[in-house]
Length: 482
Image (cartoon, rainbow, N blue to C red):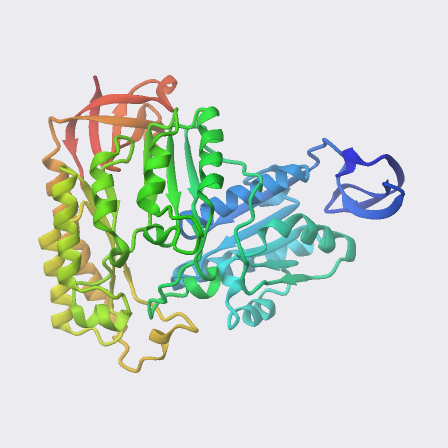
């Protein structure tokens, strides 16, 4: 670091990114090392804009990116016209986010022409795809920097290379041996935090690109996870969400005997933390012991996100999900017996290759039988490099659309009925902010992950309050402060 050098001599000023950059010769323990493209110490002279697509894992990665950039002297902006760096953290799980990235980044070509010093970068899952990267390099010639999911920690060095050489920098690592600890994070919330407990996935569902772009499962040590959560608690964080592509398989790659059920118990003991959430759970790995923990640990919220994907055994087999409809229903029954009033949410895909009318009817009947509180519903889209993309019996687009509309109709009816049953009840709400549509209304989440709107003052943001539900809507509740 520059601040630790024994002798720093300013040699020359150069223009870069449209702001003041400097070239240094640093004498470090008797050795002279040229460091180019470093900002003046303690000066926030550059602005970065970051767009994030995809899941909570991408959101958490963006927090790390923001922390790294802050250490490099960057401030942040939402205005592309004043940004010195525009970075897209991308998702490739479905086709729509990819289209948005190509569209939005393509529109930046005109801005880049007006401001050649602007650095544009793409990171995350999209460039991690071997088949997609050459396409991106050709379609987006004005993008200066590409890096993937395994080398976020190298962002400062990669930026310096772009700045000092003026050349495009592409660095994609195939995998990483183990999680890198000690990286900074700049979080946007003072009372809620994502905590990654593991990276990667070993499941290889036939439709999913995640194992190819995120790598194999790598668990963080319990000590590292707990240390991060204790620091968050000391800073006033009340709620943590433990993240992993499949949290239920946490610890299987560690020498430690601690599994996810035990990790939950250890997190539950951290003083100051009042709520614990986690996502995502794979049905095949949820254990009876974990289910018992959900009912026993007081800080673990009464909400389980358990992606089912389909209600047909035929489709589940072709998806390589490695459980049956009957097994999934058994898990749901056990959870509801152990955790009365639990909210269960899910992911459901329609139009998977080979899905027949009967298969889709099985999915609808499962939705009606389980009665999910809500569901993320989406149409299957082929992902290059996955086995499902090579299947011949692809479902026509018009059939997919008909099915998704029907699924949404059925699920919305169930969601509204469940919410209507809560009218008159009193719930605990963590106040998250003001409503986007009405600044006079506050919004927050119940322990069961329901969104509640109610009148109140901004001083309540970040607090846990009691609210009485007075009205039910399909996706939210309306209440009054008690």
